[in-house]
Length: 435
Image 1 (cartoon, rainbow, N blue to C red):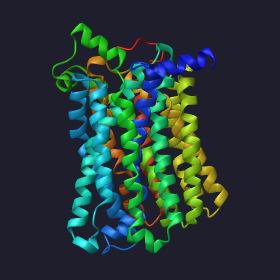
Image 2 (cartoon, rainbow, N blue to C red; image 1 turned 45 degrees about the horizontal axis):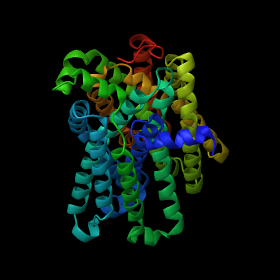
Image 3 (cartoon, one colour; image 1 turned 60 degrees about the vertical axis):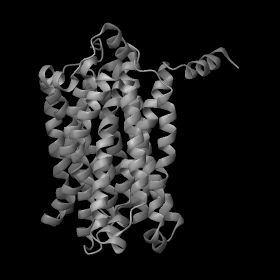
Image 4 (tube, rainbow, N blue to C red; image 1 turned 180 degrees about the horizontal axis):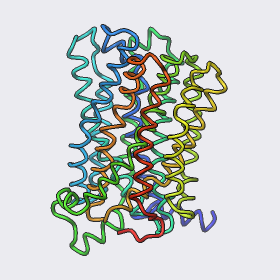
């Protein structure tokens, strides 16, 4: 065995090794995004089983409304986990978050449907979505903070990008599992019981994430805060008192990011089949290919941001959505399968250009003693307002106007907001010292 291989294996065995931190932080984030997105990718069956009285687009609309409900628990979740993570440590908060998410997802798989218990079925679905939203609120900010705080000073963009690699991988895994599951079982079996399988599989990823995280030390930056006795007693309050302008920047910065995810990566597969009339196999495979391209591209852009800065890539990503959202939806409605693949891949690259440097750029806005809280507040409130509602609003816009392409107004408007925030409020931070 080579010396480098031996060093890597020994490093992975230590509790404070950066490589192990990347694995632990990323895998837990992957698991929570898988759990969160299995619901969205199962919307076709959930709409029939939990909202049987609504037909077609109305059932899908109600299903995405319940998906959006989960995001309304994010503010409470981010306040709880922000306080806990800045006071007790990133590791402690992330362990609680991933455990709660795993339990909630498995319970969703056990839910009786409308035909069994009537109106109580969608009510229980809403309750579990609220618990999922509460749990995932603590995951994203904690994972981003952990990765950036473990990173060497000149590799924060690259390390932080794995927060998004794992997010994309979670989307990809959820889409792949649901697609594979639907290809194994026929439609009658899916509606009878097989739709539950992807939810049950969440238990496996949750256990693996717990094992990885429980064996990891907290970040070097947080340990320094503990040693210096500067850990905030009321971090959320301190964050709101001292970091409110930066939190507002984080809110605006996140708008196109969250809409990009939940419009293009979550809603579009349903849009392609239900609205644009694209063949279901083309919709699924093009989405999977786009997720692969997206996930593999993110660390490249993260590493590039360490060399040329965060702003050029962030501006390119936001501007890309401004100019391309309407043309790409027009492409999706062209009836050309090759054009659908092209549009999906183009969207993936635009979003990856933003997502690569995104976690580092957002984390660099805040000091260590309130980073978890401040980062989480700006990010999660924006996700609640714009990300969780993106699919619901898009479905509603199309239904209201009767024009499929009008849904593009949502990502276009979001991109304009974020573009202005980056242009006028966010200085370059790639070479600055982490606060």
